[in-house]
Image 1 (spheres, each protein chain N blue to C red):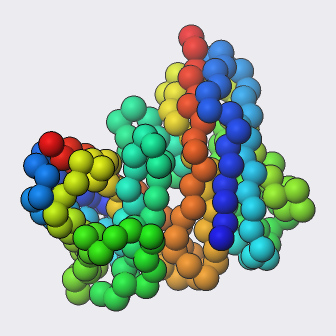
Image 2: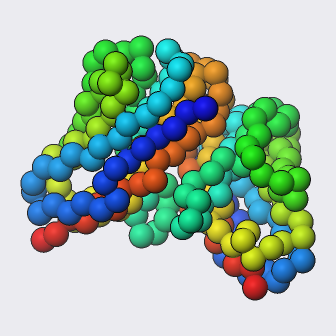
Length: 114
Length: 114
């Protein structure tokens, strides 16, 4: 099976712009979770989508949003970018079941905000 | 809220030797999952091993094994016969069985020296 894929791998934006990141899960996985990784804050949970519905949400401002499509692919959007949004954004997919929810990660999107 | 603590920011080991990475966590949950992930310089987050809290038997995966002490809320990772390719940042992570949110520790940078 192909692994989790994320596009683009690298992105450079300026403050005030918006950005959309994409994540394609492992075939058969219905849950997609997003994480932000920074040197200062470590790995923080953004949100999780399951069957096109947001099932869990972390403590991030409303500028961070996401959605999931019927094929389980997910997008994450950040509006009005700030310098502090520079980070590695990781998505992870899983079956999303209570008995089997192991998450497998994609390679990440490195976002730089200038 | 759950917390995960990794008290060793950096560790080093000689090739072919054994090393143990420490992790403690705090939770009021009785059923949960614990994971070790590794993140090499490529930044790809890779699953190393998983442990279900209701299982008393410690998980093993080839050269990787855990020492799970539920009462002490301790979850250490032992790497036997260390290889140069084991050089990476290692993250301990917690997940409730009722949710798909991973809570990560701060990470331990492991360097395997030739």
